[in-house]
Each structure stands twice: as C-alpha cells, then as structure tokens.
Length: 67
Image (cartoon, rainbow, N blue to C red):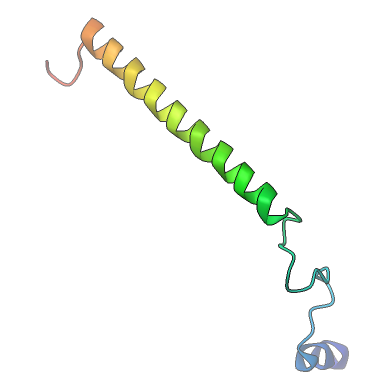
C-alpha cells in the first residue's frame, strides 16, 4: 500500500504513454484529425439526408401516425 501512496503523491501517471504536450492521445496529427473530422461530418450529413428522403417516400406510400 505504501507503493501506491508514493506513486499517488508523486503526481506521475506512469501507466499512460508519455506523448508530450504536443501529441494527442489518438496519435493523429492535427491535419489527420481535421481530415477525419471532415469525413465524419460529410458522412453524417449524407446519412441524415438519405434517412429524411427515405422517411418522406415511405410517408407518401403509407402514412403513419393517424393520417
């Protein structure tokens, strides 16, 4: 138990990799992170638009909610 106390009092987290202040936890560079985020946003918007169109088509074919 003394080893745990010594470790906690030292304020170091030896179980985490020492990436330094300039690196992210994911290992991505800022440019790669921006590219990944852009793809994520485009795919999310595309999926949402396709879902809206699909729901609209189904609504015209067979309305629900008391219509």
